Amino acid sequence: MHFINSLICSIMRTRIPRVEVFMKYPHEVQEDCFRSLIGRATSTEWGKKYHYATIRNQEDFAKLVPLSYYEDLKPYIDRMRKGESNILWPKLIKWFAKSSGTTSDKSKFIPVSKEALYECHFKGGKDLVAIYCNNHPNSRLFTGKILGMSGSHNQFSPGAISFDGDISAILLQHLPTWLDMMRTPERSVALMPDWEEKIEIMTQTTTNQNVTNLTGVPSWMMLLLKRILEATQKQNIGEVWPNLELFVHGGVNFEPYREQFHKIMPATICYLDTYNASEGFFGMQYQDENSDLLLMLDYGIYYEFISLDELEKEQPKTLQLYQVELNTPYAMVISTNAGLWRYIIGDTVRFTNLSPYCIRITGRTKNFINAVGEELMIENAETAIALASKTTNALVTEFTAAPTYFSDDNNAAHEWLIEFEKPPDDLDLFTKELDNSLKKLNSDYEAKRYRDLILRLPIVRVAKPNTFYTWMKSKGKIGGQHKVPRLSNDRKHVEEILKLIDRA
Image (cartoon, rainbow, N blue to C red; front, top):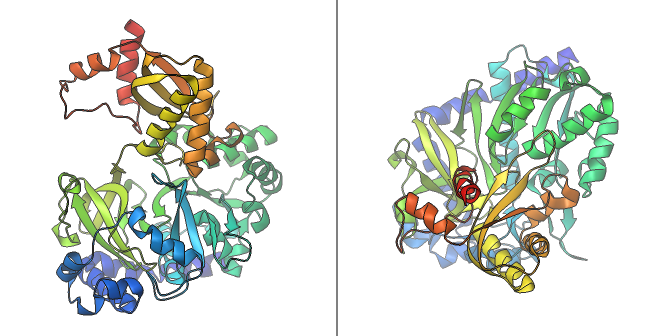
């Protein structure tokens, strides 16, 4: 095993020179990526509609091709899911990553082409290992098993040729045989849709294996690790897997979980953050001591950026990579090798370094909560509040919500502070209706609420009349242009308002 470990690490490290090329020549690499994307898509329906054959440079591209949200591309994607090819991308696409929904749909379906799969997502995984092995020359990562937690996938409809599921499940389905043999649990278990059963089987089958690497979303991984400690009656995961050396995480902000992991993980473990979404693998931590994410520039993704003060304009001005500035928040725009064209992904980032280009994720372009991967958006929240109010004969004046994170005694939850003009007939029923509506509106929220494994029932607290007005006034934000933040991914606003409620 030590020979195999050394061989694999050596092979992985051969990617390092290529990474160094795009770190040293980022603009040239992005120019090559841009020209490749345009050339590939010129004969597609989209390419013909927007005259890709006439595009000579990025300025032409920005003039001819509109910025897109999912709703703009959805009619094309729906056709692709039914088996049409050469629409947004020249080839037939059979796999679609299921992500959180929009204003009109419970879920989004992001196309995952073969090019995106192998030139982006898998390339990102290999580069992550290459960078880790390069930084840790004595690593024994491949002397044991990689434990990964993934979602599941489903056939689109009877007789259909397209499939959908979590991006993690799609990647697992296409893993090369040699790598699949080095991971645990077996594929049939990893793809089980019943998370409670999956965690139990994983607990039973992995505790006696030599696990050296964990990969997954922190919320689900914490749930598994707590169950393993309970089953083995151990205090630290290092007692279960003494050779564990790496945890690769992503999907949500790791900071609220860091202290919990420190309590149960071996002190020597290395944590590496990634920015890997359904739409593409965008960045990864490349230094142990620095959590900034290296922007990966040769994965078949062409990047543009919009400053937030431009975002609400009818025709926002986009910036190329060489035009960005440090510590300025930008909305990220991507064009990909799966046919997402000038797509506003919804994330906001700021650059922490320009040589090489490094970023930190700062939030979303809209109000949201994404504490455990639920990606709850403002549209979901407002619709759910309206439905719960109608059912319970209530009238809501103002509301805000934020997450409560895992503790030793409780799972995470969403805490809602609501000011009613007319209180509900039954507050418990209101809470249940709010929860049920959110499940119907957002598939990611529904998954995290499954049997209370990750998220428990929402906590609803009633605020007295004028509580929100008093809080806004204290912030100097009285006036038509100022609005109560509906959703926050941290508890700053909620804690301030709770103090007002407690004093009332």
